[in-house]
Length: 199
Length: 191
Image (cartoon, rainbow over all chains, first blue to last red; front, side, top):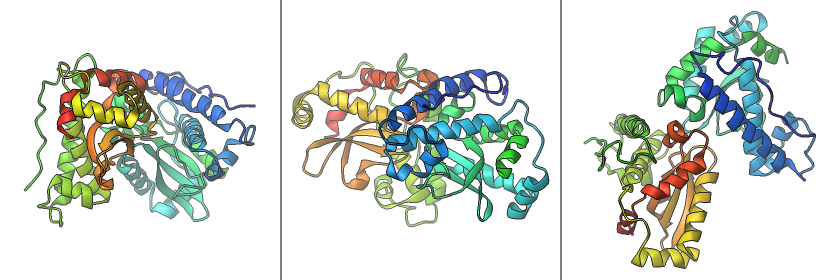
């Protein structure tokens, strides 16, 4: 059994104007598809075929760099598509909101910390909201690394992530990464983030 | 003293159709300029305030390094292009390439592979090592071979901003076009 490129829950143009249809189509059918097929190829003969992606990521230090890069690329984009929804949905509430307020002071302070992590990640990478044994933390990882990986500086379960590879925003925003990050907040599906929070 | 964005030696549309005017407007006018501005802001009031760009690249780390190296790298990158330039290495450069890689074609294949496989943002380089021999190296993000005591001779920027407006995910197509605008005369002068 091998990993498959997931279908999106919405059309490519559904996230406009924040994310344009052309960016979405290339991001999904080219970038994400390549990570998926490269991951399957990299796992051949490793003994990890058929394992869950989370188990693969937890063991990337024992596997090839191709598994780390493409396994991360596969998982990270799955999460990214899931936490987005046309027009956004709700705001943090209930226990998720309580945890955000407890660990960041306020929802706005959390958003500022997350936006800063996204804006200042130099080169390609991701910014994350992560749940771990300390509570909720914001962090970022280079390239396609993520907090489930043994090699990651920030560790835990990612419950929200933003792709800050230039391919995620360049056709629409070019060098203006902060504008993309600002637009991202209008697309968050907080119900899905809450589901990941409750695990 | 502050750093300034060096002037391009050609018009923004001079590399069309291989690199579009729009790409250069952003790559030179926005990205390169932003690295210059950030460097000036970060260096002010530090030990690097009056240092040369090369000194900062060799001695600094963190944010100052990232911006200084990106200023250096982009200046070096833009300066090596001329659509009507010299299309093949000659003389001493050609001999050095053949000595290190067997043939010019083999070198091009290996350099293309280095540029295509650098994961994430970064640069592929042809460098001259301390013994005078040639090598291909890859650096991530702002990385520069001067940090390892190697002398850069040519470079290919594989940050997505270098090609995404023109080629999107097709980085190999961008590298293929890179060879069509590289001026080997500039590379030879750097030896």
